[in-house]
Image (cartoon, rainbow, N blue to C red; front, side):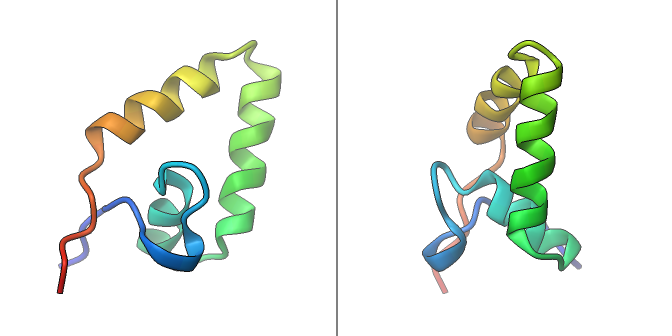
Length: 64
């Protein structure tokens, strides 16, 4: 069963939200980051607020 976590390692840039979403959907993290930037630009900052909320809500990846 797949779970959504913030990523660690090479895919992490700011808080690991976009990398975690990309790992969950098994796609390139750059695509998620580009989509997120487009949402932030087109929605006058709502995307930035959503990113910070996701960074707080999504748990960190457990240590293996």
